[in-house]
Image 1 (spheres, rainbow, N blue to C red):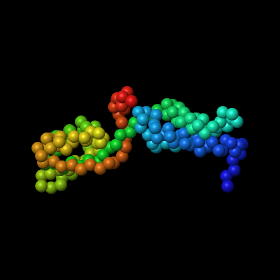
Image 2: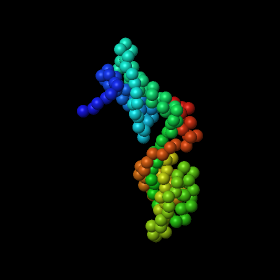
Image 3: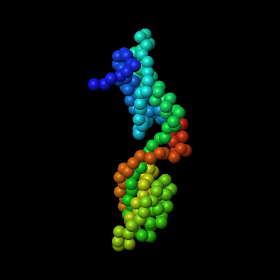
Image 4: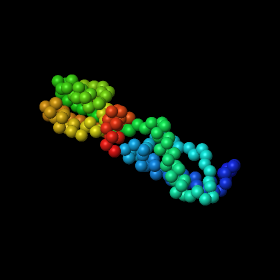
Length: 168
């Protein structure tokens, strides 16, 4: 049993409407149409009016609250980051590490896997890997292989986020 002090039944009845508006705005996002993630929303107050209160009005209020909060807090666009393992002949390790760095990758380490071959582990934004198979074949003269696995989402650099936001 819940006891709510100082609220009328009419105000309590609109809480689901506010939540529906908040959830809809989070799904639509506030920047470039991408959904918003990793946040908590708390309803701290509200008031119902016998004439102006409606389901649609409270949904709109919830959506506008999200927009206002996002504008005040700032929004970061996230991009998927993959964990990549590249295995190449030892003579191409330097070229591969340089290439991974130019792709905004962060080399995590290297390990000899025997027979004159080395594995390079790195985290790289997924978008930077769209043509990687072709580029690796060229850099390692056909001797390289790689695997990639989704690792996480990370904030996108601001200059790239600005390009995306300008296009929306």
